[in-house]
Length: 236
Image (tube, rainbow, N blue to C red; front, side):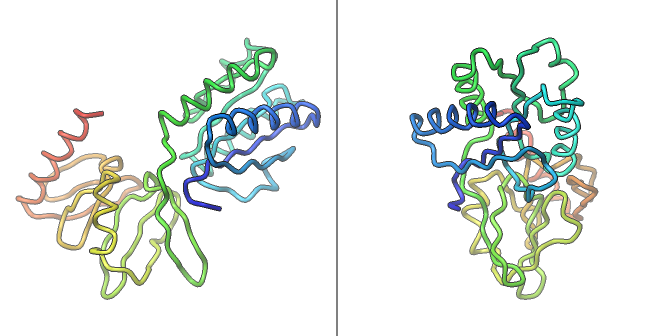
């Protein structure tokens, strides 16, 4: 699948509703000329988690399974966004999750789903992912999920959210530098580039990143990161 496709997953235990939502999204994304891939399922357990995905859940599924699935998605794939479809809008307060951004009333499906897609694109974008080979497998990771790059011998280590160990790939820092700079990375030391979205705090001599990662840097580098981060935050 091309890296700039929009990943869409529809989860609904009502086959007619599922087909209706699927047809609606085919029409919307086709009209907007957005490359996409749609998967459908009646549960989350049978899916292979993919980052940076637009999930559409039926909040009206029996037993409030929609709420359970939303929690599973949030735990496994916090970079993804969730749309809840419902005929009962009073339930939306129970559906709030950190990545639950959109609510669509089934009675006004196309109009509200169109707004949800536009909002998703505006907030998330469909930027190309960072692609690499690791252990003879191909990976395509959203830049926003990468915490930092650092060199180790002849390898480039890629630290990714929700991944215990970094990926070690045979690349140079120079080969990814230009693309990294375009995606809000900054050089911290001669061997580290860090994602400014993932800077938590800066306390000389350390820059603290997401998931407990910290990098020791000199006084000049710390000051440079502080100034760059301030400029970055002010432009958001």
